View (cartoon, rainbow, N blue to C red):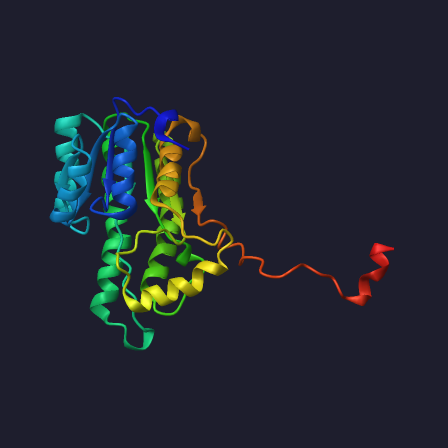
Length: 270
């Protein structure tokens, strides 16, 4: 699915976590669909690289954990763009550590970015939309780790589950203003740094063959879902979590022939 079927001309789209990966891809996709895109990240260098690929986007270096920074961002949008139509809260961090040695400061920072940051951005964006009478859309990001976790991801996985619960509450509270709130839950998406660190490479090499499609997803495949949720095609969808994982939460690739050799049920086939 290309961006050609979507038209966001005249709309202002805010994307956090735009310095790389899925965030950068969504900046390009929404810009191609005609939107005025505001790309936000705390990584100024990464934002500069994003802007080199999308000359029309507006970049702002913002730490979403800081309420003053978020408030100033919304003030900038109101002053220069009048209102905000879509806010995509993609920014997140995912350090992996053993639970036995997990540091308190790391745990707190994960929750600060993934939960507090999503809360501050959702609250501020929703309030701006409400104040300007805009029936906008907020799209938060979770992860398949919220449902199917693994060793080393205690903080990340639990923070993503919290984000999903928060999104449902936000959807209810903003519904009277016509503001929709949904969450995208990606699975394994090919956004890893290249070349891969040895441990990550080994883990992926073992995991890829078990996936139903036997490949990682592409950033564009996640961005396509964001385009849909932000569009009028999703006008009756709010409070939902949309999984984009190639079926990995359903189960593993069927690597053997299905047979029924249980003699108890022979009668069914007679």
